[in-house]
Image (tube, rainbow, N blue to C red):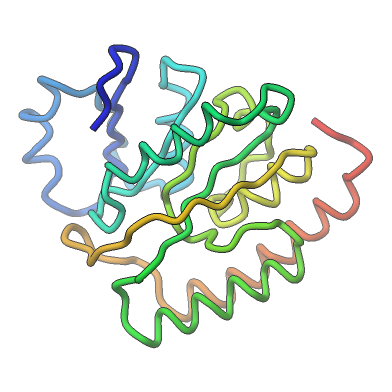
Length: 208
């Protein structure tokens, strides 16, 4: 997919109870791998990967197979075209089309996106899409907290960053199992949404 010699592929084993440990020995021959000895969550895995990245520009995606890695190239190509003056805290977000989830999941995600977008004014159409591209240094300046991955657009925009939505393909998950359900997504999501709203509302005059 990527022909540049400057591309680095970094995999983070987040400590989940799956069969990835069995594949690690094979993968580490060709890829840089970071390992969590226990499951510390998605955001901690993201932080580990981003801190360990060698390049200034970082692209992320989940390992469940729903986001084809080839789609990440679209986001990198878009980044290259952004004027330099607009790259500070810019965030390129994947916007899934023809989603391959159940009807209930698609509807609930659509409603959640509309509600979050209305409250936070974060300009992102599909914050749950794992495909994103951004500056490593910018990411490391935003506040870190559990579940922050759902609010990256708001956190980048809080610092006058521009949010860009790029259509990407979606496919059915073929690895791993979703850890999210109504209870741990809705109630925790409402609490996080409130906290992020307070953060972006009252810190607009205090840019990072």
